[in-house]
Image (cartoon, rainbow, N blue to C red; front, top):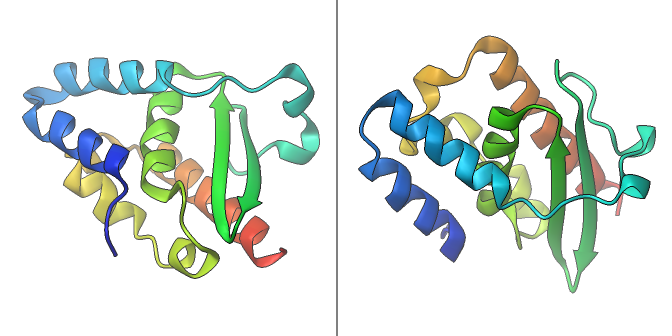
Length: 136
């Protein structure tokens, strides 16, 4: 499965990052790039359960591919969400089902920094994406 252009950019940036401190700064910068959600989108229906922090996910299917928006109250998690979104943006439902989160974050050099709770939270987001995709 080929990577979207922004995913290539993320890989390049994080593979050049030396050490956790630099990658943490990059994470926050990527989180700042997230398209903000309107207050009307931060509803219980859009909330992702299974995350310790508040996370909202909005999905839209356009011409057979998915476009997602996400937000969180936690700054590092916003960065992780941004990296997840660049990996899945524009995929069809079948492609979305084949995403391997562990592999993606390993490629980014972030797998060791994912605490079990963050990892579980990201899997909950990916699972919610798959649920939304299978319902449409």
